[in-house]
Length: 95
Image (cartoon, rainbow, N blue to C red; front, side, top):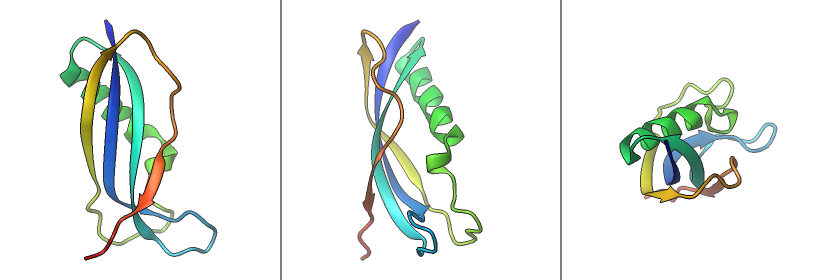
């Protein structure tokens, strides 16, 4: 199997960063390194990884609409894995 670097952008993820803070829609950028047979299977594996991570879960008690989307901006073959995890979050502009 080959290693793939998946550069991912998310939009409209409901998130609460502080205790008692309101839920706000955020976007993010993140990279996941996965082993897969093809770029298409790397995308599916990386998506499953994100779904399993607590950082991307809905805030406790959230009952509002969910319009979150994930886009794979790049999937490149790589020589091996690098640092895994984390994301850079940004607020979504309303309008």
